[in-house]
Each structure stands twice: as C-alpha cells, then as structure tokens.
Amino acid sequence: MLKQAVLDKLNDQLAKEAYSAYLYYSMVGYFESVNLKGFANWMLIQAQEEMTHMHKLFNYINDRGAQAVLQQVAQPPHTWDSVEACVAETYEHECMISEAINECVTLAIKENDHPTNTMLQWFVTEQVEEEANADDLLQKVRMIGDNSSGLYLLDNELSRRTFVNETEG
Ligand code: OFO
Image 1: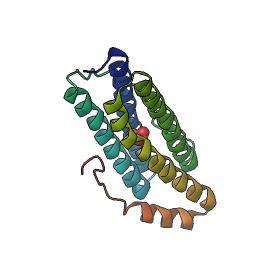
Image 2: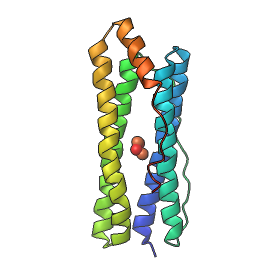
Image 3: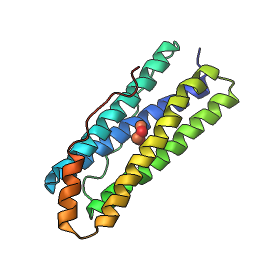
Image 4: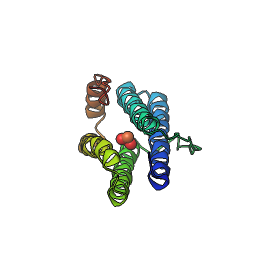
C-alpha cells in the first residue's frame, strides 16, 4: 500500500515524464522544420524513452494497489533561436528531472518506503545517462559553432540513434 504523500509525488513525477515526452516531440517538430533530420531522430528516440519512463511509473503505482492519476500537461515551446538553444534546453531539462527524481527518493526514504526507493534507483541511474547524453550532444554542438559541414556530419551521426526500451529486462 502506497502512502498518500508518496502516491502524490509519483503522480507528479508521472506528469513530469509526460511533459518530457511532449517537450522532445516538440523538438522533433522544430528540427524537422529546419531540415535537421538526424537531430529530429535523436529527439524522437528521446521522446520514446520518456514514454517508457512514464509507463514504468504508471505500472509501479498500479502494482502497489494505487491509482495513477494523470495531470494536465503544459504546452512545451515549439521553436528555439538556434540548434544550440534547443539542445541546451534538453540538458537543463534533464538536470531538472534528476533533481525531481532525487526529491522522490528523499521522500520515499523519509516515509520508510523501501519498495519505492528500490524502484526509483533505476531512475537515479538512468538520469546519469540522460544528463551525460544531453551534455555530450551540447558539447558537440558548441564545438561545431557556425561550421555547416560539422553540423551536417553531426546530423548524419544522430540519424543512427535507435530506440531500446531500457525499462525492460
Ligand atoms: Fe525521463 O528522463 Fe528524461 O526527462
């Protein structure tokens, strides 16, 4: 049985993961609009991963005999001043999500909820990768600067990213 405070926090996190998916889908649209299809692919994989994060929390809440309550998802931005601005928002967003996950863990520990703490450790580890991936992309974009050949090559590289459901197995 989940305590109400933990349930509320997990429902909030569910909404944050939904917003993450929404944000990255919006970035897919942006990159498609500026004909950077590799970047669009990278964001699409990102959005798909967020859906699996949402699903993992949703299943966990249900498994604990509680009900996942979906919240309103805010409208994300749909345009950015530059490729760098868009990728920088990705990195900042992931840092914010890491903080939110840490707050969930802190509450689970305070409420002596070991199963929730154990489940959340998957997210703690995942966020290290999420931040590292976004930071890696941001550093590459910054290195390229205004070099269009570099941007072309990076876009090509990003088109090879494929989706793996890391919440399974
Ligand atoms: Fe769900 O990890 Fe990104 O936001």
